[in-house]
Length: 127
Image: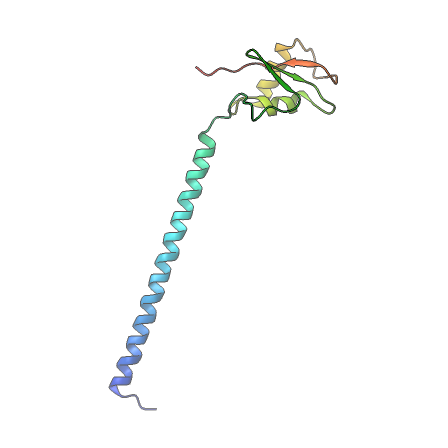
């Protein structure tokens, strides 16, 4: 098959156009990937930098009562000190430390709880 110089130039131009379009698509994909990674990292950093509030009205469960700067929890069936600590501890505090503070605050010698028992929560104030 014989190609005229005009046909050859047209074919070369089409190839160049296709290559250029592919390059543009690759750049767009790379930009989207970088933006997605940055948004993911920014979101992760924001989540980790936020401190969980001690307690707010939105976070109060059915078993939590707030009275004049004193927070108490009424033990429900199935509650454990660990569960109560996880729900109420400050965000950055280790759960084990909060369990220890719960036991100390309520003069508990062990982790056995009774349904209906009232526990005073250690109030954490950041200064």
